[in-house]
Length: 316
Image (cartoon, rainbow, N blue to C red; front, top):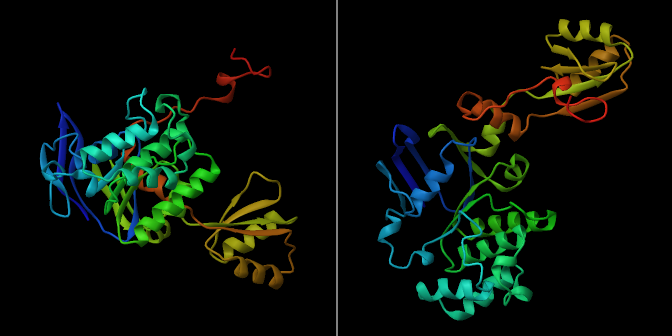
């Protein structure tokens, strides 16, 4: 179990983490989300002793990381996949870590097999691709067979097969009763992987809830209706209490507040034609953007199209 209690980290006058409290329980995958600059990486670094809190504490089963004699037996961390000596082979990199923590040599072979790097075990890690580097970082995190796993952007650089593999791996580790904390900016992948979410913004807690609860609290879903009678249909829908907006597609309406079944019943009752009726539920991405809208540190300036390119594709 991971516990943060009133965790605060100051860099000069900047509060990277601000009175943050949460608990990560075993037996489930917990997603750790937040915009760039939210304090996620700083929090993870404090967890493994790379940064010290200004105040408060973050512990593993009630213990400080720095008090662990052989930390790889307690927590495996993937914070920076390419944290190795580029001249060492993948095997020797893991062997050095194993020997420093009293881990048997055979475990090196086991984790290399688990992450699919057996065939390149003797090659220098400095020549690895980004995806291979991620696999080696995951192997290092699993080396001590720890009860706590934390990963920062573990699917970065992986191909679709690799993404599916790491998703299955993380869920299987949680199913074994381990504590799994995963940070990612890929909302679609997090929706498939996580059971619970901790969302922070500007160093403060924004949400701590099950993923279904977070999605349900997001913006309302809508039904996309295609009809040759959009104006008439819109009047009927509004009379029934729906919010109706024209869609980009001609003859299409976005309907909020009524289900597909209710819209179909109205069409039958008023003898109107439907060419398409698609339910769009709210997504984790939409819910996340709504949650963090007020705590985004690095926003975007939206330029008019003519300021970006002309017909030739060259900036004017």
